Length: 294
Length: 284
Image 1: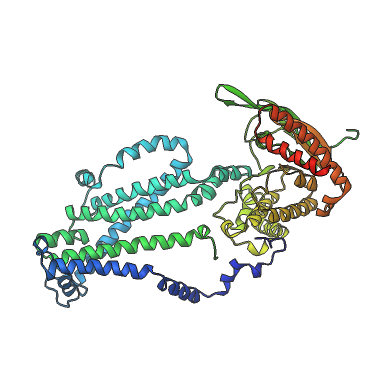
Image 2 (image 1 turned 120 degrees about the vertical axis):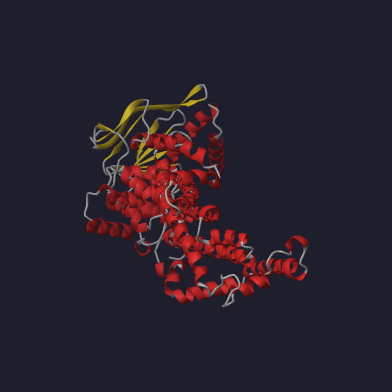
């Protein structure tokens, strides 16, 4: 920490990472990941869950579990070219359901972000706006999304829009509130500095308020996309004719239990991918929160 | 003052007090001094004597109860880029690179074309030795580099007056010394009218043209010392006879102030008095 009087940037550790290529860095990260206990413990957890599932349903067929499809049955159905119930890796139907749900969540998420982020920023930035909006948000937020189903169907025409609206609603509250908290989290000293450097309000908004609340915005978006999936499935169960939520309910009604599980696991995987993508974009946009590297 | 000097900024009989429960806590009481144009004025005083309040009033963040601060003869208004403050805690925007931070002022003031802003930013970064760190974020810079970037971010605006509020506090001793040398060079290269606040006597004497010694609460200027040490200054000036005389004189006044503060119930003064007594023993 003492050799900064005569800058010797080439010997500074932070600039070493420039010499590494992207593949080198990836290989290095992969090696480090595989040599830590984390991944193996995680794998053990997943294997235990599968084992529990297998033992309770297929091997011992315990009383309340005997009707459930076991892992072998689900896997056989899922990988069958000619599935008993019509849904497997090889049936176009399966992908259609995924696409329907994904598209709905994408739309809900898009509107939640487009409307929620600016509203949250304005709430945090301008006291007046917060005083108007905050009580309303706090009043509506605790209402479970499912309670909105009747109103959504009454208010919004068509079959598609109410479903998207319900998914949107949940994501919107999460995004707005987290963005608002993000502005609140910005240290007062940055506003003071911006002010004395000659910023106009527009500059403060675009260059301090917005980037300063980025970490919270992305947290909000991740929570948002999670609750959007959550409410979407509920909405699809109530009033859908496509999508993974509909598939679960429909298969249940028709007693096609392996399909229920296939759709459930698919939801888990797709939901995870969505939040992984958001995390990745966030990390790319917020390199400033990382201590080393460049 | 025998010869007339040009005052860039003046503080005229400024008073300020805060509510402290039921009582009024007087922080500044009839505080007056001025900043000579192109000179480096250092303000030193015990902690909690109202130095930061004074800067806030001069920069326009707070209003004085009585008296006023004037810039080129006119009372100051809202905070603006002609009176820049470098704060105690680093306030570099963490989401901007060193380059973007330094370029911030000119960019939001929109008076210069982009090309010009870019050239001047690079020039400033070079002057503080950060040209190779232009694309680093504050988190990736050391404490000393952050302070240097912050100095550059202020200097690029060529403010009429620059305030530095204990800018090197919190740095380790080595870095602090290096920063002082850096800052000396920067100042001597720019002749920027500056008010530098510190609580370290050696730091103060090393860089000052004029030393203002502030009293404890209520704060006002107890003594103005002209420091006639030659420029460019180098750290070896710290061992010269002239320097030691200035230090003796300054410490004398600070000691008197500490005694007064102590009898007034200040706990902060105890440390200073003890240190001063130890020092006297070591001398005899």
